[in-house]
Image (cartoon, helix red, strand yellow):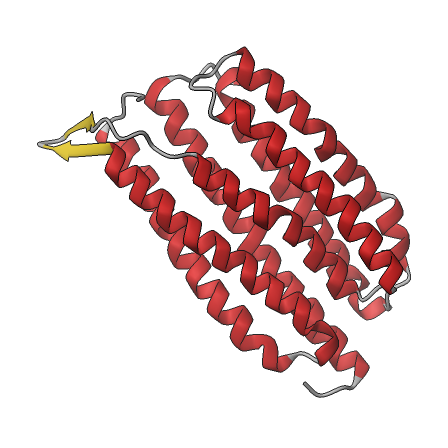
Length: 252
């Protein structure tokens, strides 16, 4: 277990707590907001709420695991012997990351064939990206194992980014002008927030971080990225669903 200062321990715990509150509020907002969109977009909004609900559950487990891994006594942090379970975060990503791409595709309301094709290809690539990054994350240190698996996970990541800005751009250009900008915003927000994950993943190498500093930087960095990629992205998806419902002139 990495040595942590009281400040580092508290910073990470507060970040997890903020994540729990954010995802709880976002889940209620999206699911209660389903009544404001037309039938064609209810599935996209439901999945948006499902993503934040899954994140809420796993952040609760992450927080409890963090609390169990360390003991705070008289201003000193000591390891309890219970290992902080990083697998919760990757299980969360394995479920939510493909769903984030699927909700973007669903809210665009493409043809059934294109919807299925893009959901399978992009969702599959996203799942592969997470699976490849996991061995490096749990390797137990900032070493070559983390570097190699991180580099491998970048392959499907680059494919996803390339697809979002090439073939999917053609589908976006066919959307009505009233929502085209919002859809591009959602795509750009996805790519921007996702770029933050490899930055956090590789930061210990680039900045030569170690010990408690590396642990705190990784956990807080991932939490910020999760909030942007899921809750903030979800708000944009909800705005697209509202706008398209208004344009369709169909009541919920």
